Image (tube, rainbow, N blue to C red; front, top):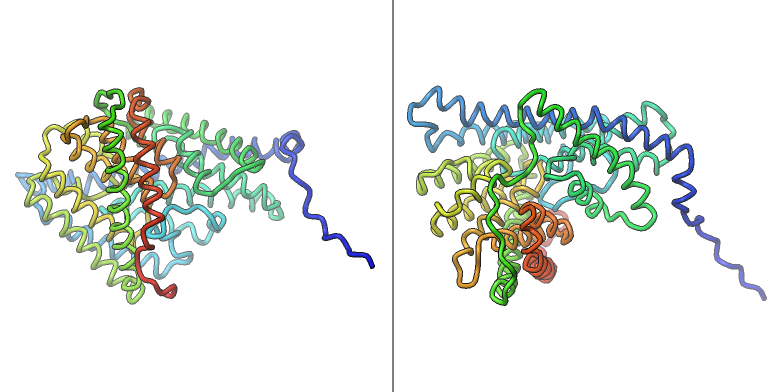
Length: 442
């Protein structure tokens, strides 16, 4: 009696053979060429979002009111934000991309051409009118979708691997300088997608090439237009100190606090999602109202601008760190609570990315903790950002890089504390029960 051997699987991929092939070299060339228009489109999108924010929340109230924008000013704009975003998600095909309540996702393939209008419009209304989400997720989807559309137009029967490589390159180019470094943006995409082994090298090379070219395009357009670089960077970096036993001990507490705060934010977002699906347009407008009222309350109590509560936090973070000494612990706690509520409301129904709000809340938490015995400002900010990003993104390596690279050269000294805070936050995040409704249908 003989037993047939199981069928052999597909042959192992040989990166050396693939890289030497004409098809792969053609993919590299296409990735380099696509990096130029996709990064230009991404730059234009960010410039448009910035122009809308500046006009509606800065220029227009200055023209209408002598004392600056009144505290109630964001309320009608956030209601409009919810109304327009809800209508876009409800009536246009494609659900306007992934819901940010489920975390940072890039899986499932790039969006198809008919889904791109909804992604662009929902992101534009969400980001431009004040909801608390970032631009990174929509840009990744837009870049990947445009690259995939180009592949289909050039070669309709393109193999899946070619489509994956070129779509990834488009995503890399779209966020090439958004996080301050092309390498950091590429790392975020690769860790999110879980790319490893031979595929990592094959996908990373065209992506990094497109990302580098995209960074040049961003810099060139900034110099040409003067609209801004739209790259995260701190104008003033607090001086770092060498790690101590005290700061390492506080890293444990900061990691636990970040995990618990991240759990609360995700619980708010996921718990509200079933209500959103009852009436997408009406409930999203109501959540916009709640975000606007939260920002209004912050300005009335603290006498600081409501803009610190609204938006992604990318533009407000450098100013927050620079003026850290001017904030009392009470105001920082109020800001953290208001930003947390607005972030949770935004996760439930709007469209955007979770990176920048997590970094802002982490920085607020770190500045508030900087006065504790044995603590100093630089490691406290690094630990806070790392812990919150680990809890919300569930990407520990990216969270560590986001926190340390943001602090520049001084980030090297705070790396040990950041690593401990990230590890603790990541572990506790998965130990805690899954937030939100237990019913899968919800």
